Image (cartoon, rainbow, N blue to C red; front, side, top):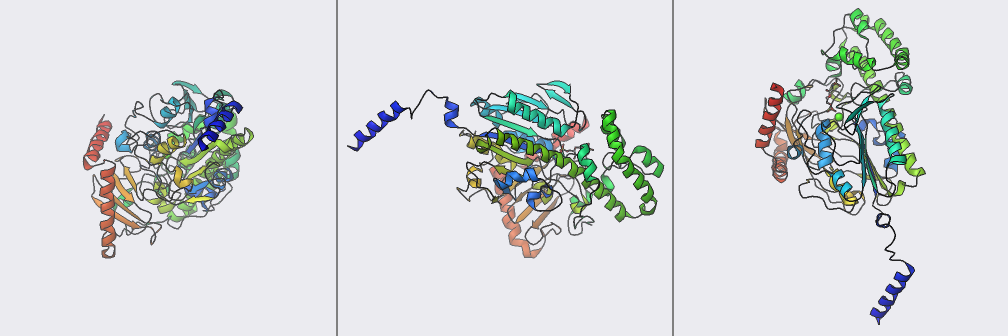
Amino acid sequence: MKRNLLKSLFIVAVITGIFACTSTPQKEEQKPNIIYIMSDDHGYQAISAYGFGINQTPNIDRIAEGGAIFTRSCVTNSLCAPSRAVLLTGKHSFKNGKVDNVQAFNWDQPNFPKILQANGYQTAMIGKIHLDGIPQGFDFSMVLPGQGNYYNPDFLIEGKKVQKKGYVTEIITETALDWLKNKRDQNKPFCLLYHQKAPHREWMPAEKYYKQYTKMEFEEPATLFDDFEGRGTAAKEAEMNILKHQNWAGDSKLYPEVMDELGIEETSNWGVNAFNNNTGRMDEVQKAAWDAVYQPINEEFKKIYPSIKSDKKELMHWRYERYMQDYLACIASVDEGVGKLLDYLDEAGLADNTIVVYTSDQGFYLGEHGWFDKRFMYKESFRTPLLIRYPKEIKPGTKINKLVQNLDFAPTFLDYAGLETPTEMQGESFRDLVGGKTEQFRDFAYYTYYEYPSIHMVKRHYGVATDRYKLIHFYYDIDEWELYDLEEDPMEMKNVYDDPAYADVREMMHEKLDTAREYYEDSDANDQKYLKAYLDVQAQ
Ligand code: SGN
Ligand code: CA
């Protein structure tokens, strides 16, 4: 009886077209679209949704308001090119081979855009990727060569160099919008990697924002004058101090002739060249607009310099303000671009079925410990912003404090697309976590860093973090262990590795580290292999 009823219902369904096999399969499956937004060196401290109050990023915040914000998202290797390789491959640096900014990247290995593309997605990558070679896995790519430039930048379109007039952040946004509106196949789901160069050094903002931000003042972090008491050699020897290691011309935008007049020597041999290259790319109109704002800043500095030149604190105050003004002004353009993309999704009726991710290739120091740059497994560079919106699955206002990593993006996107993750990928999908279906997630994050000796002199290290503790081993020309208790010491000012009160924690964290290295198949042999590869490149 029951069976007959089902049978007749089935027949009715077929007749009325409920199982309409003739409609387009893609539409029926409604695979979600993906917009993955990544900026370069954007510390979470400089996103207003994180609550630091330094600046306002209303558009990036919209993603968190309509979806989720992650408070402990972190990277596996806090450097540009390695981070991007991890994003694409879902494998740790020592597995995908791109351990530092100098090794070659092997595009032939599987990556998630290739898998999406093979399964009916339209894929595009626009902006900075910082990986040599022709990108694989994209129907369309327009990327900056290497680091790229802020003004009138060159791009590689399908491998061919083309110079575009204008400001890099805006060009990348306009190109992304044009691809979304006019270039993609509207019948297919899409995956767009929209990658800004900003706010990477040397922080060259767009006119409307440098006009605004150079008038602003910013509160200094409590650790701006850190003396590194209580920590090891690595932090003491790093060359990331705003006063000592930023370039006066390239970074602080002091004109070379003003430096000559004041008798200021550049902190590195490329600082003046960087300034000349960056401003030298501008056309007359752009340069005149720049001078109208930066010349008066230089004039003002000429006046105050004689009275502050031997006062390191005063000099640091001045340089910190200069740094924040330009860095945050660059972010204002990034935020504006995010707003334009979100507006487009609303207008086109795509917001509901599109996953939007905002993140950075790593975090960044905004004066904490006196630093800029990244590289360390310490908090500000290990953590990275992560906000995600997908109205179909993620409740607005969701907050996630699990240790998701950039390693997890590839499996997560494949999961959303209903596809299998290849076994060689090492990350874990966080779809169910952010969708509120589970609270379970990996309870540790594993980290490796290799680029040393190099600019900023951050020593080679690896380590493991849990939600509360962090164990780090610095090796190669030192052999030092550090242990931090983030609950007691959120600013990581005290290494408690040798503190007897932490003996049990130390043992527990060593076990975690051994487990992590075994689980991901990392080893001292890997460390030595990549050290040799690095030194070989340096010797060439
Ligand atoms: C450049 C920067 C460094 C930065 C590296 C790597 N110096 O060398 O400060 O650490 O890039 O950055 S600069 O004066 O040339 O800007 S990364 O984001 O590409 O890894
Ligand atoms: Ca970067």
